[in-house]
Image (cartoon, rainbow, N blue to C red):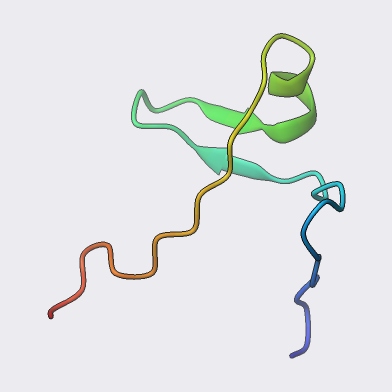
Amino acid sequence: MSGETLITVGETAPDFELPGSDGKTYRLQSVLQHQHVALIFYPGNNTPG
């Protein structure tokens, strides 16, 4: 699993950036300065079945 960072429950998530639906890019550490964040992994999104 080259390039992947594995974390366990209760561990602090590594900093990352993702594009928002508003076209802006959001960085985890920047958002955490202003509000709480819930990360949800939903593997079935936009897939058949």
